[in-house]
Image: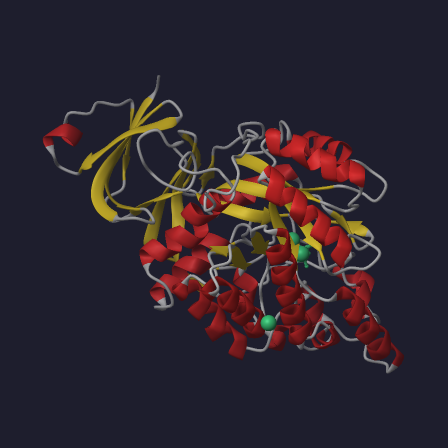
Length: 466
Ligand code: URP
Ligand code: ZN
Ligand code: ZN
Ligand code: ZN
């Protein structure tokens, strides 16, 4: 078995920081020992990676991506091949993508279709959640089977009537089933019925620009749906994970539920922490680049999201990576903001944006690793194989240069999308060497990964629940 030693770096996990060397055999970490100790000095290895002056961190776990998602009359522009390659460049070594059950279709058909898209194409390891697009007696029963296959979380939509939408009765049934089989219900919490009324009224009044996307998706309609989802989960006796939280008032709902002792969890995304309605209001049609749901909020919301991340009322930062090119895709909504495909690119940028948050003093280094690696791994049953550096864990490791300065740009990123939501932003910190299960996939400017290295990861159920 190939032995690799990573020498002289500062190992950072959610639990601790230590000056240690890391010994890898084959695909796994086998030992850590203080740098310079006789134990570490005694290790011999074929490959030695010098990490002096660098951080040695677990590979990022992005628990929310949409590679190749058919949506809004088009399809997300990153394939599993291009999207996982870009993730690797950005220091993310596991993604959890959303397989989709179509209306009238089964969970099995949806899951098989996603396996077919991903298998043999991924540069890094991957797992699936399942979107319940059609809650029926049949699909409720199928949930049990999927949990047994390691697809242990199910997304429901209170938004998008006519597409993915479930009414409260369907949501309650799915939650009850999840309470029985251990599946974690993930909620897109926006009142889609009310939003559609506001969309219709805005368009009738000639309000067609991208910025109206933010106005009609009112923050109180996120808070209301979040509140309702929490109560439905409470009635069902089910835990709840609310995805892509953007509104301060929705964070308050989560915080209140957690004070009550409910198993309610919240995820936010870099776009809500770093971008705002100012971007949606950029001149011309530029704002279309920032159309996603939940929408970007006024800047004041950002402080509440950072606070939530510090107080653990929000636990996870995922990207909701769902890229659409500006040319030909976002442009579908010229003259009608409601036709702009919803979603932002970001799978490559998350680790660096969150490191910038460390530099800016929003979060600590260990909290960075906790919200981007360890907690998503625990939340979705991948820990400690993923999300930490410890004996027995997969050697998904990033040697991270905390002093490297980079300027984010579509001209240099690796995502298959023709713009960057963070164009021109200067960030401090960058992944230097990225290992996926012991294999170096990125080394400085060189890409050494290969499509098909990444393996499907069956998951346990949420590890925060007893
Ligand atoms: O705008 C978004 N978030 N697009 C992806 C689909 C979803 O709702 O997560
Ligand atoms: Zn969503
Ligand atoms: Zn409330
Ligand atoms: Zn999403």
